[in-house]
Image (cartoon, rainbow, N blue to C red):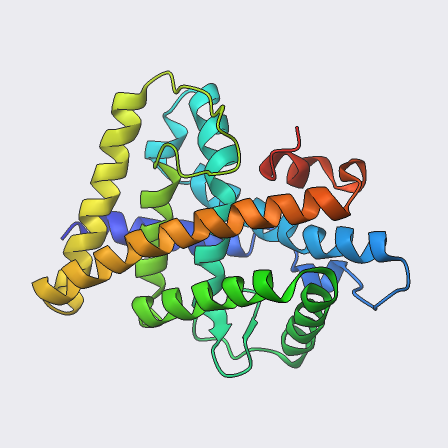
Length: 252
């Protein structure tokens, strides 16, 4: 095992998680009769996490060594999936809430964080269909069961996915990478590291089964992304969405 690499990934993740304020400290999610405001709030919540993920990736040398064009393509088309993977780490399977991750797995969830998570859930139920919410929570349940509350699994899975070309199901016109061969190598590198880590934590057979389940999860995430995109497009004037999230949701 390349424990030094894993340690550097852990440090990068922890640093990035503290790099921007929490959404709960910056947003007010009081329910309003203005449906458009509710929808935009439901999207703005993810803006903070997206920035944290970008800051995490910027501290990974393999990612930073890619050219600007390839980094932009990978982030634009894969970041929403990474957001869902990251959320599984703090997912409360009983109450079906996911809390903000400050990068310290040993910190207890604060009362403010719990209250904000409740508000987020209420907002999603208000804004989106029952079917979409159920698919979202079912995916989180599945991922949570696979990661065993292990941040390293989540971090390695995120790095494997960011280098996975064609993960997005929203835009069929995904641009061609300048160095697709090297990006595939990086995807293989972190997938192999994840697989070897899973073997170390359990057994070869268990690792194989988990990797197969991860592939199934990727397919479900693709369906969720497509359904989410269509639902937003049908209900929201996309000009109200902040530019960063508009890009990640493929409206620009």
